[in-house]
Image (cartoon, rainbow, N blue to C red; front, side):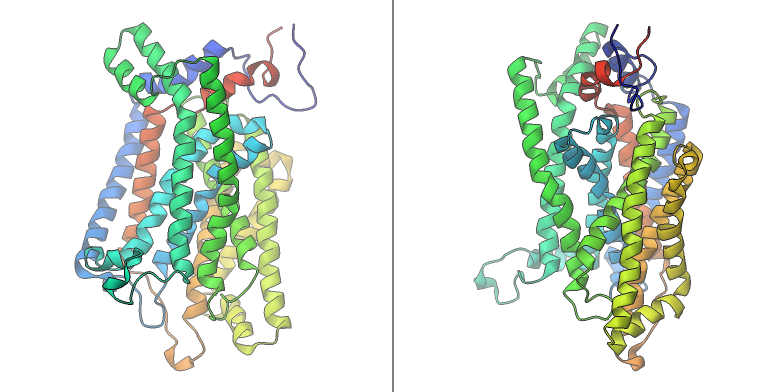
Length: 457
């Protein structure tokens, strides 16, 4: 009989063995897609196709199909870009930082969070690319071309170019980190396919696993690479959204020119990222019957992080208003006054309600351990974070220094269509991932079975 600690809740419930882990998590990979999966996948494909139509129209006709005007040159597209980059932050945080801090509770949720990061960054990248207009006419100008091409080459002083390097690096390291973690699990599925006599599946997963043999030296190299990638990824969590915030903070636009943006954007990114992880994992644990692996304890811990980051975001909102008043700069003060009382007051009110008030409900244990309440509030948080980006970007430039140039922004069908495109791609990719890849890291979960699970006495 093996004693378990009574000081904290079990990370794995149901008295699972290592064999149970392989059976339960490999089941959705080896079985046929369920009817519910086909319905959800079909809906996401419909959204994707509608978005592709809107995107094709914009590429053909030009970005004049959007609701942009001479005053509001950035709007729906950059709002969605920043929102999707923020969504991608939780995956690397869960994988890298919690790995370095030896937090075992990450092991059931890191795989889905890492996949979410990859898909979210791809979605984010579509918006600045399309915002450039007809890519085939001038996309090469963002590359560091030689001087023989003229003086209009990449401006390395621009934070917009820093974005390219930061997000490309973030995507590359996250992709490698995600795939390295999948290799041992691919080998498990390969071995099971060999035993079942399924040669096609065995061949595919053998190629995906790079011929993993499970030797001690192989495991040693695997763990060393994981730690190195975690060390590389940790500063990226802080740097990527910091650099995204520089797109605004280095300008002289009232409401953007502020030093609080870097930490404020990072906290907001983790806040929205964890909310999206909760949204996906609550559905995944129900559809694939993984309640013994993604437990209420995991959900409670993520809700605690949402409380912390939501409170930081709330303090940032208050600090912004205080500095706008204390600084006595008329244009800056008016920018924040206009956010709260101007024509976009409803967006500001939605932002404050969703981001500041709703996370505080998780102080009550009954709510932060309630599946339905967590699911609803995770969606509300992401709605609020979208409104935060909209408020920062649109309300700061629709009324600038000159009243004669003030204007309103109204999104068109094609603004909304490209946003729907990214949702269609995101969920299509996630459903394919959840069907053909193990959605939980079997190797890591097996490593904590003895110390972190309920025991059958």
